[in-house]
Every structure is written in C-alpha cells, then in structure tokens.
Length: 109
Image (cartoon, rainbow, N blue to C red):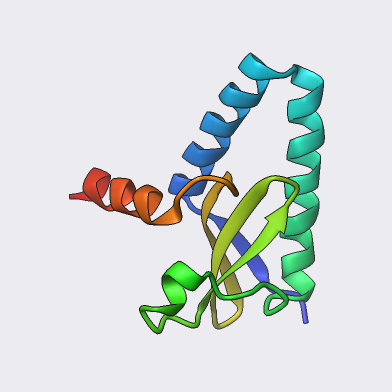
C-alpha cells in the first residue's frame, strides 16, 4: 500500500517556523538533520499510514482518522482519508498541541 501525501499549507508554515527556531538556536546543520528525519518519517507514512498513534488530545474528540508519529523531538499530526495522507501539523513534541490547534483555528476565523 502506497498512499499519496499532501503537506497542507499550515504544516508548511510549521516547517518554516521550526527551521527558523533551529537555525537561530542551533545551526543550519542541525536543521538539515532534523529536516531529513522529518522527510523520512513522512515517506514511511506512505507505506504504513496507520503506524502512528492517535494523539490523546484528539482521541478525546473521537476523531480516529487523525494520527501522529514522532520524528526526533517533533510530532507530525496527519489525517488518513481514503488514499491520501494529509499532514496538518509539524511541531516540537514538547509544545502543547491544544494551544497550537486553538491558534490555528483562530487564524482561520
């Protein structure tokens, strides 16, 4: 099974923020290693879309189509819908997902 992966604009924005943070506080090399690890995790989703766990913040809402995988110190939150995986969020695993999702909703409104 190989699914199509779509990285949503919101996740692209997350990547830009993450890159800025890592380059500013660590190095460009650290960013490149992080980015390579993220790409590998996303590639693995194509073959194993249900390997990720359901985030507890989302499980409480009974939305089992949303899952997460960890990539180093980062979480990738995605949705499996038919033959496509939609990447919704890429964030430092130590950040509060409820706060991130609330901010994202406020940006949309």
